[in-house]
Length: 161
Image 1 (cartoon, one colour):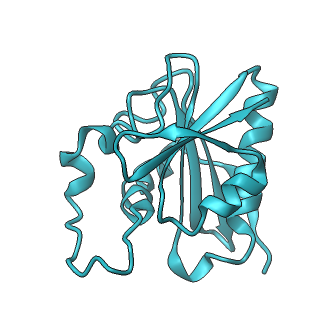
Image 2 (image 1 turned 90 degrees about the vertical axis):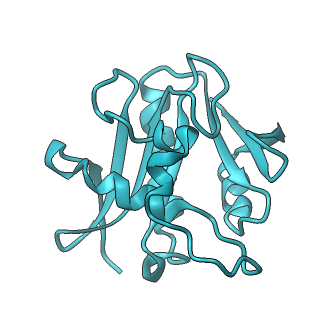
């Protein structure tokens, strides 16, 4: 599958709303539908996209297949899931379901890690559900679990440059 990893354009930032919703990990045992407005009602979640692109630490890369954005990874320094301090950007990542488990997530995360290293960051963080199958990928990329995240269902992971 051919795809391009590139910076998000300003006219595409609105897509982060959908990608944030897609990023919500729903365990197999959970049977209720998660309402889309949860991304606006949960402050920690909404802070991942609120006014994105207006802060100096806002960076987003997208996976583009023939002009269709199929995934996004974005970081920012904000009080959201994965927040550590005001110098450490927190990761968010999402791919549409049909594009998962094809190596795109690993590639886009790797590219963002390179970008952050080039920008001089010392570390990056990530809040992720303890049940999320992607924890293995994050560990393979070099993230380490340092403890519980925002609550007992989430890991706080850190990548040191």
